[in-house]
Image (cartoon, rainbow, N blue to C red; front, side):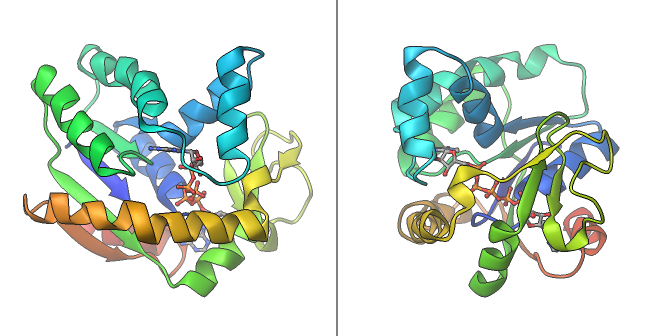
Length: 210
Ligand code: AP5
C-alpha cells in the first residue's frame, strides 16, 4: 500500500507515520525529518534551510524536490510492503513533481489520508510537543512523567518552529498554499478523510479502517 499522509501542522502525521511504518512494514519518507537532518549539518545549504524552517516558512520547491528525489528513487530497492509519505507535497508544483517521480519508478499513490483536527487543538499540541533528540520519538508534555525520553532516556527538545508566532504562520501557510492541493488528489478520487481527534491508538484505528 502506497500512502500519503496529509493534514495541518500538529495533525499527528509524524506520530501516525511512525506507528504505521513499524506495524505495517512501510517505508516512511518525511520531508520534515529529511530537511531537519540536512539542516543540522555544517554546510552552506544547511544554513539556508534553517533560515526558512526556523521561522515556519516553506522551503522553496526546488530545494525540497532535490532533497526528496533520491529517497523516492530508492523506494523500489527497499524490500517493504509499500511506502508512506508525510509532509510532501505542500504546493501544486511539488504534487506534480511527486507524480512524475513515482511514474519514473512505476509506482503510484493508492490513498491520500487527510487527518483533520480543530485549530485550537493543533496549537495546544504543537506548543506542548517534545521530541527526543536521540530516537526522535514524539511526545506531548502533558503525557510525560519525566523530562527525559521514556524510551531511551535522552534529553527532549522543543522545536524552534513550535513557538506560537511560527505555529500561526505555519497554520496560515497550510490553509492558503497546501490545503488547496487536495483538489489535485480529489480529482483522482484518492482522498479519504479521518478525524484526528481521540487518542493516538484511536486515530491509528481510523486510518487502518480508511
Ligand atoms: P514538518 O516537520 O513536516 O512539520 P509540519 O507539517 O508542520 O507537521 P508537524 O511535524 O508540526 O506535525 P505532525 O502532523 O507531524 O504532528 P505530530 O505527529 O508531530 O515540517 C517542518 C518544516 O519543514 C516546515 O515548516 C517547512 O519549513 C519545512 N518543510 C517540510 N516539508 C516541506 C515541503 N514539502 N515543502 C516546503 N517546506 C517543507 O504531533 C504533534 C503533537 O501532537 C505531538 O506533541 C504529539 O504527541 C501530539 N499528538 C499527536 N497525535 C495526537 C493525538 N491523537 N491526540 C493528542 N495528541 C496528539
